[in-house]
Length: 198
Picture: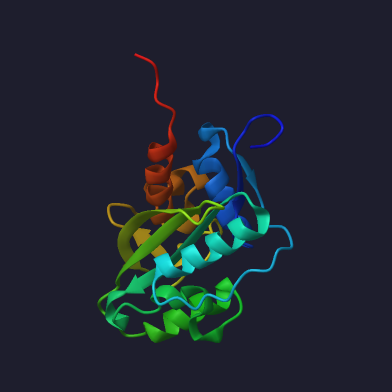
């Protein structure tokens, strides 16, 4: 707890876009969400989203002695047999979102099957080693070129099922309402929502 009685939670990511989404999604819990700052992050050596998220959250919880929240997420493309998956953030060893988007488009050139899905696992780690795990998915299709300058990662290429706009063309609130990370965070929020008195 902080001096004002709010629950302190360190967000275990250096990705400013993720921090913004998480802060907006959990705003009404009243938690004191803190950025990672200059703390070192462990190498993501897990074979699954859950392993990578737990590795990050548990490491930060131990270092800060606070609750720590981490997400691991990726895009799974049907025509690429589920790639890039857990390697989405370092796909093709490209160093920026733009380069990874271009690399994915190159890999998808000539592919008729454009189906893809985003997957997110959110881990809340306690300093005592206990972890909570929440998951969300969002299905959609990949365009042949980016649209929109919002969001981050592969958002400008991805049109969710039932939508005409990419995630990159949506506001943070619109994306949060339907996204894979939004669904995982909604499940976490439901688990921690104060029970109202009858």
